[in-house]
Length: 412
Image: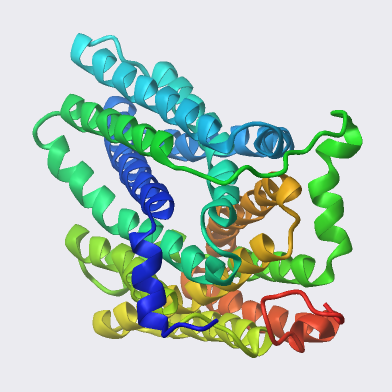
């Protein structure tokens, strides 16, 4: 690669197109996290129903599932920057509408959920487009570092966004919503400033085959199929984070402040690791590193499940987040490096569906398992199940176990 890794990282951050892309992602993610806190608090104050809080997640999830295959084709046919700008404009308008409805006193559960669904639809279009933009603005040799920086931006937003949203909510919900709208507007402006080289766009006629071609491409590439399905099942089983309120109150004996620290711990571990990987990218023994990270994720879940110490629980969740981000960087880097430019939107859309499905269904699975067998046994089963899945995938996908480099080779 030719350069010292610290110098490579600095050069990447000083590269204007990537700097604009990264800043846009940070602002958009912080705004989205702020909205999540404000909407949840306001809706619960309005209805007093825990079920309605679940409907917020469902309202975001359904558009992503329904639109995944369509948005991938759009991202491969249209200017990805234009998609990002349009989505940020829609999100800013939705946030402003929520603010006006709150100030005007006409906000209702139905209107909030409708606006959340609109936000979910915009996110569904934006995420694949922005992800597919990364190889358009950085050199191929720097993609792994760039992916790590983008993931670190998302983890930073998960730490800063909820705290900022909660603080601004004390000044009034309208303040939070208008601030989020302003952040979405700035994110759109930064997306406009991104300069990319002219890239090949999909030109084949739009058909059922082209819409599903992202799925077909991943299915035909066992390395990509193995990494994405491994993450899907690992996160599906290891969704202990969904049960944090139960652990905080009933097992660890802490209050809302402790719950906040527990929720932040995985993001702190993930942020520290992603920044490290941005400066010291993974180059060799990619497959073994991937499997070790998934096994560590499962082991950290088990430790958290049996812990009755607040400090140990924080440490386990921090390790869990660090292990998870190693898997994320490897998976995302492989998807970008081993996908032809004209198909990156469709593959990124399917990748987003895998990730979103695992997180949402993982939380649901944890809740159902806790109801059936108890909270601690459900977390233990999930952590041990993650380790079992990693062992099985080593057998089912030997080419993934033997994978050495992110770049395609004759055996990949």
